[in-house]
Amino acid sequence: MKRGLLIVTLGYFLSRIWFYVIGIRFEGMDNLDKFLQIIDPPLLEHHLLSSLYYSSFPPLYNLVIGVTLKLFGKSAAAFAVEQLLAGWALALVLFALMADLGIGGRLAAAATVLFLALPPVILYENWLFYSYFETLLFTLAAWSFLRFVRRPAAGWGLALFSCYAALALLNARMMFFALIIGFFLWWIWRREGVTPRIKRATLVSTTPVLLVLFVMAKNAWLFGAFTVDPHFGFHMANGLIFSVWRDPETHAVCEQEYPMLLIPPTKLPPDAAKIGLEPLAPTGIPLLDEPYRSGGQPNFHNRFYLEASQLYSQAITDFVERHPRLYAKFVRQAFFNYWQPSDDYLYFPPENRNVLGVYDYLYNAAYPLLLILYLAGILYALHAGWRERWRSPEAATLGFIVATIAYTMLAIFVTYGENDRYKFTVEPLLWILVVYCRCGLRRIQSSGDAQFVAKSVVCAKRWPSSAA
Image 1: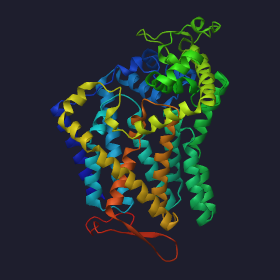
Image 2 (image 1 turned 90 degrees about the horizontal axis):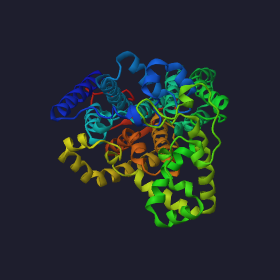
Image 3 (image 1 turned 135 degrees about the vertical axis):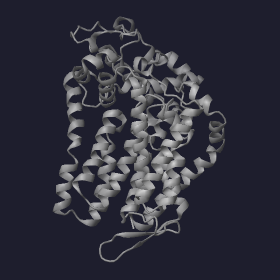
Image 4 (image 1 turned 180 degrees about the vertical axis):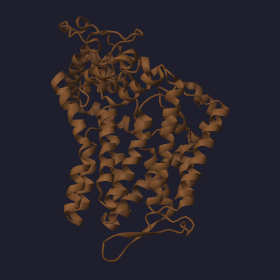
């Protein structure tokens, strides 16, 4: 394990040096001034806590940005180092998870380094947004789940639910991810029996959920919505309008019945009168009152956009109820978008993609084969789990990984244009399923305690897996 971690670390940093030499640079600093979730940087730098409290968007990424601005100012180097450290952590966790699943050390190290050198990973790592942190947290959650199921201890359970809380506070679509965790833990405990030790570990483990509930209660108090992010209509409209403008039939229906669904929410001027709303009384809080940010862009944290979100939500709900066939077309196209190469994300600046050049082209040319392997890995994991009735920690973890991937696909029901970003967040888990399927691992039940031992031709005494 120590040698494998060393190889992964060396491979990771040597690859980053090489990509820097050929011209890859950290991009996206202008995201601070234009992305709707991010609070105006001067407010984060000088009024961090009050800004987080009065923000109606998930607070965690704003907290990360605010702390960085306070310590280093608007330094691209500081944000680049944060992303680099997140990538290193992802490398270590991905290797450890593979090794714990019974994949041999040499193969796990090689597969980890190869994955972290793929074009999508390089592009996301060098772009300022929270997607890369989501990717790390999903992988860490899967590893924590395996460790916790293997031996229920409060430390690993706390890590598992901390990952959930962090994901929910990064992106509201993860608010119900705890249901996936809870289902699989219930499945395991129904078989094993709930011992006093498991009860104590569970009680401690679920404490991070209280932080999510606090944010939801805060939003209910301030904005009247018991949720991590009250902007549901705003976000869904942003996705649906892609389809409205690309599908003539949907566009014609919206022209006649839902003219508001022809206007992207991000293009609305922050003026209540222009969309028929009563002017909002000032609160005296700049984050909620100011129509524009310091750089001149609309302030999407203004209360006006919460009111507009409700109008969009009503229009979309009525559209789905009255035109389910058109909505099904939207979902179908979104499903296909989800499985596109993750480096096709629309909002990447072109500079780094141009630097990757032939390498990025070859990745896209080979992607259909990779997609087949992803789907084969999912089917293999389901088959292996069903064969063992998910009795072993490894089989249960494979099931948890597949459920996590399926959960991220729920985004296809509410968004259209950014599904490749959502898939990237679980791409390490898809990669694990491919490697696991390739190994052809088989599990046998050991005597007495219903634990299983991995048998693999790639394992050697020099590289013992921690699962064995």
